[in-house]
Image (cartoon, rainbow, N blue to C red; front, top):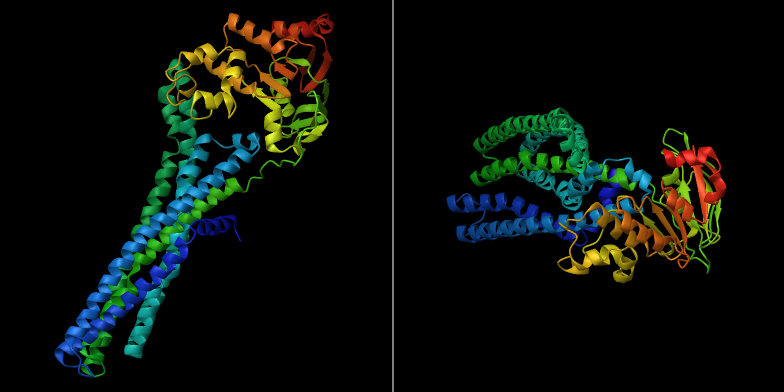
Amino acid sequence: MPPADRLAMRAVAFAGWWTPALAVLAVVEAAAELALPAVLGRAVDAAVGTAPRSASPGGWTAIVVALVLVLIGTRAARDYGTGAAGARSVAALRHALTRHLFALDPRTVSRRPAGDLVGRLVGQVADAGQAAPTVVQAGSVLLPTLGSLVALTLIDPWLGLTFVAGLLLLAVLLRRFVSEASDAVAGYQRAQGDLAGRLVEALTGARTITAAGTAGREVDRVLTPLPELRRHGGRTWRVLAGAAARGALLSPLLQLAIIAVGGWLLSAGRLTPGELLAALQYAAIGAGLGAAIAAVNTAVRVRAGCGRAAEILAEPARRHGTRDLPPGSGRLELCGVDVRGDDGQPLLDRVDLRVPGGTLLAVVGPSGAGKSLLAAVAGRLRDPDSGEVRLDGVPLRELTPSALGRAVGYGFERPVLVGETVGAAVGCGDDPVPLARSAEVHDVVQRLPERYRTPLTGLALSGGERQRLGLARALRAERLLILDDATSSLDTVTEHRVVDALTGHHDQRTRVVVSHRVGTAARADLVAWVDGGRVRAVAPHEALWDDPAYRAVFRS
């Protein structure tokens, strides 16, 4: 079964008991709709005196009224149930897709534009969430047609044969519509994702665009997918319009054929006026192409949405183990680590690095040498293509997510604050105050309107304040603290105090600090000199300083 169809089945299951409830309502509605013409015909025959048995017109009229009320009630209930089932499925699919996105390797996520992922999560998942109502609709949309065929055949076989001939033409029309609409909708959704991705990129760099005065060119770049979007959208509407036009032609022709055959049977005395009225209504019900086209169009959109969401869910999630860390000091080991780019070129090449527990390790090297990548591998932000990374003797791949999260903390140059409030962004469930004090940001938080309860939404922070809050969050780490240019936006005085706190001997954690500053390297217990994806040397700063190439790293 294709991934899109498997996801559609999951969406149906997510709707829960609403799916069978909608199915029951659909059957009841179809039964009432099919019974109404026959009962109405009996009422007409009773009124004009052509009924085979004497019957009260009032009794048949009462049944007609009851059937109309049933139709009104079932349709109202189906409308509500369709919305409720869709809401449940959409919510469950968004939870599943969001959890999977955060379970992926960051490298896998970064290959897709953020806007494209948002489009899939918001737009295409909303389409996929309509799977349960669509399955019920697809299963029940033929009930009126099949019921009409049976009813017409029971009234007279010639009516049934006439109806079958018209249905064959309608089936050919629907088959062509499904093929053309599927391609058009899939292309439209792809173009939407491309446009959303370009827009998010542009909004992220809005300041740069304004400063460079390139707004006009950027608008043209963002709107590049519009012609493709217009082409697929126009094709979708042309397909719909063509199907509707052909249906509008075929349906009346089929009804006219039923009228002609019915009139001949009436003149031959084989039909009563009430049966002719019922036959005309059955022809209208069975040949009504609008519901069938709407059902097929919805099914096409649902399948396309499921396909777009399934592409993300098909990406393999990072695997975690079941182990916890034994007691230890934070000993870090990189053993034969290789990392390759998408083009197969080595980014880290046979890296062997052993950092004793409690050591302050500075990672230095020229731009593009692989410093940040080494830091990412050290805390499992990225898995190596070969080799192994161990913390206190345990491979990082074998740790549970909670054990890894407790043990390792990251401070970034441009941290993203996540959570509802400042306190939640810093503490992540722990007391944020001690962490904020260590990062020299407590006084900043105290000046906020609601202090640690201040919502992050709309909060204006400088680059240095945001960096310190991100650093405070990283200080939750119990054994390994990794800082990748995490103090680059701080003023000199604040940076000095933060660096003093992080490099002091009272901090017993292992600290890996990526830096371009000679002062940080001088404070470190060891320096890992990275060049060209390899660790060129590991030694104290004083021992390396005699090498002119090492000194050139800081001059550059």
